Image (cartoon, rainbow, N blue to C red; front, side, top):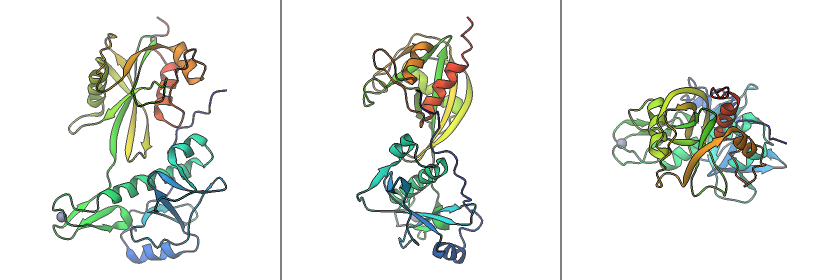
Length: 293
Ligand SMILES: [Zn+2]
């Protein structure tokens, strides 16, 4: 039976309180409320208890960040914990599907924000240690008066089709038999479409014409935004760049369907529903303009 197609890390309903979070008194009051929920994370892992997200009492960590306030007025905070037992990683939690989607999205926010603080403690302009401000949404350098803001890295990910076929590739580090859509980080000065056309040509030698936006997804490993696209190939003679991919080829839709359904005769498979690649592939299967040809 196919898995339920649920895209992970969407549905964060917290109010991030951008107009209040620079107010230290407001922040202190929120932090000390008995109902406050405090998430502790070690890398991309967090604490679970009896199948539920484990939260802690008022934060005492010096670098505690505000995630936001929920509909009941409860404040959500997060801080970095030392590696300990009883932790579960975000990919496993997303794959298991046991946490509410909104909580998984809050964990993604926490992981990306904490990761940024852990690696940006010093000013990129002058090298002096920076201080956290605005409850975690800014770091300030007192030496050169520069402000630094949390980063999000845009990544294009594209399902490319040619008539009834779909282009999928694999990296050598992936699990045996795994194929997926092509993806890559955007570079400075590019539009989304330009980045997508560049990546597909670099990796597989395929020129892409029309491109349509399909969906996007925060991807907290550590702080990407996956921009999901569907593109139409202008040629079909694949030339793989071995520095980028182990292999790539065209797949007919029946074969892709068997990969999604985990019944491919050679054991090939596609990404799980937690990842946007799965949804791009499904969208291609369901709306292929070459189908009637
Ligand atoms: Zn500085």
